[in-house]
View 1: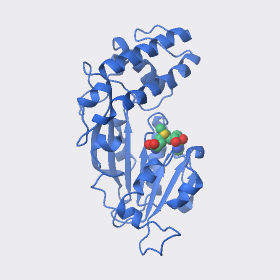
View 2: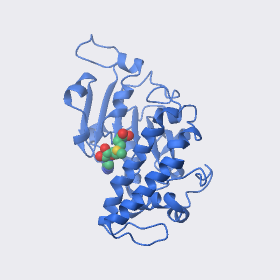
View 3: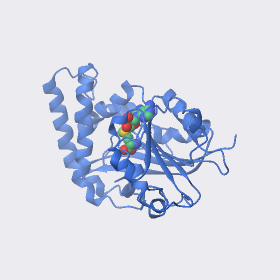
Length: 306
Ligand SMILES: C[S@@+](CC[C@H](N)C(=O)[O-])C[C@H]1O[C@@H](n2cnc3c(N)ncnc32)[C@H](O)[C@@H]1O
């Protein structure tokens, strides 16, 4: 879906030159879905050092790490693409032998994982792990903001400073309820909720030079037909995208209720399972009737000189 949103034909934007690369790392890789997709790029696949093939002259080594290794695929799958995996909390420095090693580091969807300090540490550690060789290793990052918009209440323009957080939490109807779950969960954990606006300055402060960036719209339901991908087509995702959004709310609402942190758009506390279920039903109905949209953005940034 992300490829459709941004109009990429492969796991990376066509502007990233992979001819000279040899070490690629997916950070916070989860199920390694990106690494596996990257391995399908014909030029990459042809350069994987696989036991079943004669040695290649300029191999590409794929690696993936995560703070939680249980989501990695089975070893037989990893071996089939020669993907090396290891445990790594990105907010902690990489082991000395991995610093300066990677030509490309990929990160995606850490929006509900890192605080402001977490992002500062993560960007510093990732920069240290990228090669110093000219023209500098590439960080390919894509992320999103946990704020729900509708057709009547669309996302702020790209040159706005941020989202209007109070307006999003207090929005009438199901939109406000959705934000009282998704956005409120992120705020309650001190996660950065406006990454798509702030990452350019955060990257620069961490010693990166921004080479390319583009906003994308993650749409659900009917809005798949209005907020098209930058160059792609998200027509096929209407039902699937609603389930994706619903999953987020159904997963986060009980956690907020248990902590006594679930509120209605007017600020009234939700205190019962029944009230929470009614809130979720209104969100499901609203999503199915009108659709939703949230914003994402990708960044291609180079490690700036020391
Ligand atoms: C939403 S998933 C995204 C997975 C994958 N990047 C993707 O786009 O499908 C977030 C991932 O970040 C990992 N994560 C969270 N905090 C982390 C940290 N401090 N260091 C490394 N990984 C972390 C989680 O374990 C999880 O696998």
